[in-house]
Image (tube, rainbow, N blue to C red):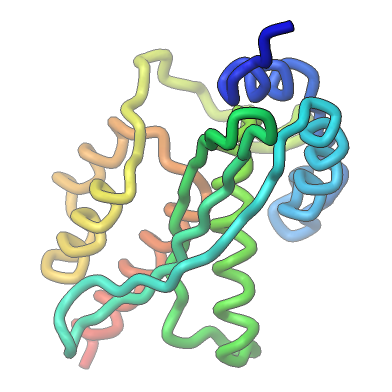
Length: 200
């Protein structure tokens, strides 16, 4: 019997893996799945298909010394036990300089959780669409296909905001992309920082 490669096995995992959105955000009023939910559901399925599931985090910085921004890059990886070949997906989340009520370890931990969740979601092709009870579904959806929002695009957007703020040009450009929630939060934080600087 010929051993299946990592892509065949991952395809099988993606086809059967179900991760319910059992978590509830009372503030924004929508259901979601956590990083822990994905890991709990994915590990048994990966073991069944002889795939080793691992994750790791790396701290990266962007910008000069005076305007450096720090991000967590998380990588989710499956390695085929039979062939030792692997496939991986990465995602980034910015570590805020400060956030009221949170210390540095909480800030970095929160960013790691977000980035790891979206790396795992990408690896297993899990949708990130809001559930049926989300108020966001009442907003009309533009049917034009959206572009992938990559790490490179994100860093360019952050650079633009730090120099120009939130402009119509930026708004129009952002409307072209399918932006994960973690990146939206980073964009919002950058806009707030720009406004605070302008008030000084």
